[in-house]
Amino acid sequence: MANLTRKLLTLALIKDGQRVLLGYKKRGFGEGKWNMFGGKVEKGETPEYAAIREVKEESGLEVIGGVEQIGDLEFTFDGEDFLMHVLVFQARGFSGTPAESEEMRPQWYQIEDIPYSKMWKDDEFWYPIALRGGKFKGKFHFQGHEVILNHTLEEVEHF
Ligand SMILES: COc1nc(N)nc2c1ncn2[C@H]1C[C@H](O)[C@@H](COP(=O)(O)OP(=O)(O)OP(=O)(O)O)O1
Image (cartoon, rainbow, N blue to C red; front, side, top):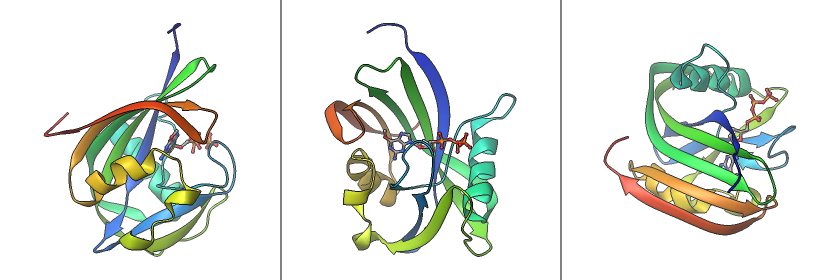
C-alpha cells in the first residue's frame, strides 16, 4: 500500500448501566450515522484530553474521573490516501444532561436497541466486546463508506 497520511482521532463510550449514549452526526465525516462522540486529536493534546474535550463539545457531558483506553482501530478506504487511527476510550464517569450540539444530536439507547444499520459497519464487530468490558485492536478496510472489504479484530489484555 502506498504511503498513507495518518490521522489520529478518538471515540468515547459513555455507558450507564445497560444503556449507551450515541450521537447522530449532523455534519462532516460520517454525517447521517449514529456514533460515539469523538474527533481529531489536536496538536499539543493527549488523546485522553481530546476524548474528554470532544465529549463535552459534542454531547454537553462532563467526563468525571478520566477515560480508560478500550480500543485501537485503524480505518482505510479503497483509493484514499489517508489512514484513520482511532483510539477508543470509556469514560469512567460523567455528569450533566446530554444536549444537542452543532455536530451531534445525543440519544440514549438500550444496548439491545443500538441502531447498527444506521452506524458505521465496523461497529457491530467491536461494540459487543466494548459493551462487555473487553479491550480490542482492529483494522478495517472499506470500499466507500458502507462496505467492509476486509478486516482483522482481536481482543487484547492491554495496549
Ligand atoms: C470507518 O469507520 C468508523 N467507524 C466509527 N465507529 N467511527 C469512525 C469511523 N471512521 C471515523 N470514525 C470516527 C472517528 C471520529 O470520532 C469521527 C470523525 O471525526 P471528525 O472528522 O468529525 O472530527 P472533528 O474533530 O469532530 O471534526 P471537526 O473538524 O468538524 O470539528 O468519526
